[in-house]
Length: 76
Image (cartoon, rainbow, N blue to C red; front, side, top):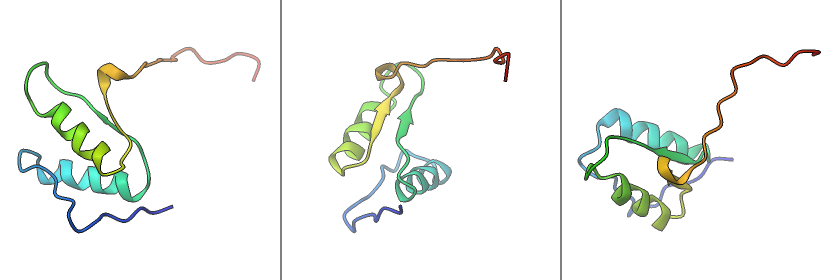
């Protein structure tokens, strides 16, 4: 399911073109966005709030529970 981006949607200038393209692709393919980065005022919360305001599923890394599975399952 592809999602449309409204005409008033404008990503912040502090993002690179690559970051903007990745966000637009995630929106169009209806994938949630996980925002991470250095601790401190880098714009993570501002970006998340903007995306959520536009109905896009976005989270900061600290809000998520990350489970890492490395061991292969036996008996399969």
